[in-house]
Length: 394
Image (cartoon, rainbow, N blue to C red):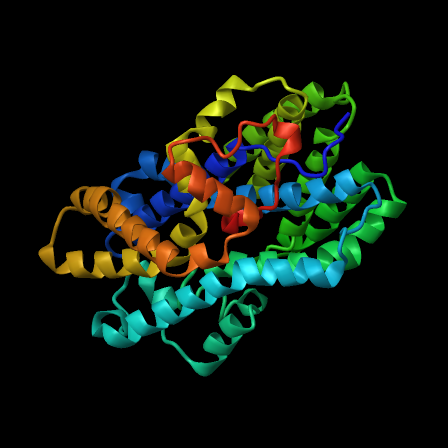
């Protein structure tokens, strides 16, 4: 039974940082050469690295998980200091780095003519820049239209989704949570919001991500329960089989069953968090996950939001600079992955220090201090430390 006021599970940081790097690796492949060049030149490798977009459902499940932990600990099914305080803290953490990245992207496009004209590359989906696309990003509404969602800086659409879920959590999800069985809430929301994937209308909204957020909430409930339910191993096995079935069906059909991949991936991550979190909270270390709590992984998790926000336009520019060299596609991909991507991460590191580090929450400030002093964030047991993190923003 947990008796402390706050909770921290340190390997969540490294897990988040790893997800950010997976997304960067995916985009390095996606931006290589003209549109489709990398997939044609490296079909097998493309089938592997091309699943990198699954870093997004990892972020969403993590967000639901860590934001729900203090709610579960409070016992009332509500935020301790009210909805306004919750949204204020989320805004302070999420929005300043987001707007810095938006200004950075717009300034880069305005300053570099190479980024302003179509070139037959993946970058073409980011331009031209017009007033509606800019305003939709300013108000975090770009996910509401297929004409806006990929403009300027592609990864930003998921930040908009997460921002909107922050409002749904207290206004919709928690009220349902207090009135209905939690597994029913998760199943019903996920099933209903998968409908656009079946009817082929509105799927660009990724509405099922709300269900993944709810999966994270449920994982938090299980983490702080007295004991894990007996069905958890069976649920993990069934979800694993579902994941295999979805990936095989996707390969056989020749189409990417993205919504269903994201749902099963989210389910697996939620089950992992429930199992690993429960063991850690109860003093039972989870050795396979401890690698994510090492000093380098903690630091990677600390800057993961900046990595996520700033890398895309830099990779787009790097590809356009390389194109006139006429490199073979495989060589260009290697340069994108092992030169351009690390440079983009380095710029993100700089932007973290310039902007994001001034808006860290208290826990993250402690992590930063501990990392720089080559210590762990705290020597206290997992169940007496703090956990206020979310999504790529930690």
